[in-house]
Length: 293
Image (cartoon, rainbow, N blue to C red; front, side, top):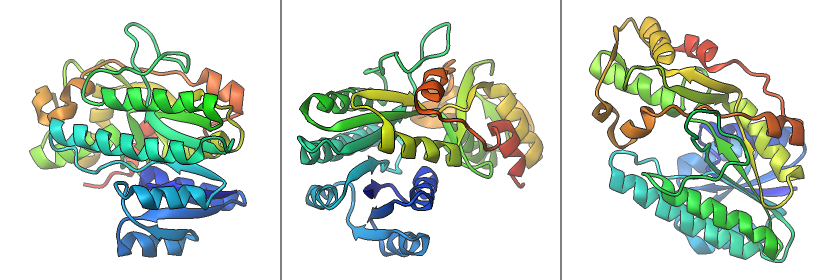
């Protein structure tokens, strides 16, 4: 397929680009800067200049492709308002891409987070939450999946709290950044809350499988580690950086503090059975051993 990809230079997107090219697909990738365009070209993709807010560019990319994977999201997580603005931008982009594919039976693969269910690991059958700081994303992705009724093979890959590569990325990466900034490898609450995780390379293989084979209206979990205790994650970070490990206030982590404090394990049993996905890369705790002081 010729695949239109947004977010192709991020932690996940770079791995998805490589995965698609390695399996015989070609990639037309949105590039918001000259640096991004050069990186995409070097990776073997064709850049299409524009940002996620350039809706005409998104329509052109979708029209020129056999399928779409939408990964781009604002990089500004500094305040609750900035996160809400990022969700609104993503919603407009996804709505535009979905409308461009109506009646074509072409695939549209989008991304969300795994849901959290009190007392157990969430599954692919659980609905996405529509409240909280990123609740708007849940509502948007649910609406995109309904485009299966209008001739779009829409599917969603739900990502865990940490997508990692060489110890970097995701919520664990934010813990690491906060540790470097404050001098303490901190965690909110008592640290027993669990976060699911996946290596970027394993996530990329699931995006490819969804693009190729997922039926319309389906959701899949890119979860390799069902749930590592945040205290255990912080312990590895502290040891690797030579910093003390301790509980810290939720406010240390800005608008994500309340989410960081939640117990949110997730299962991928249905994904593994339905799409034949099997993670092969290092676990989060093993990958964090790559961190350098």
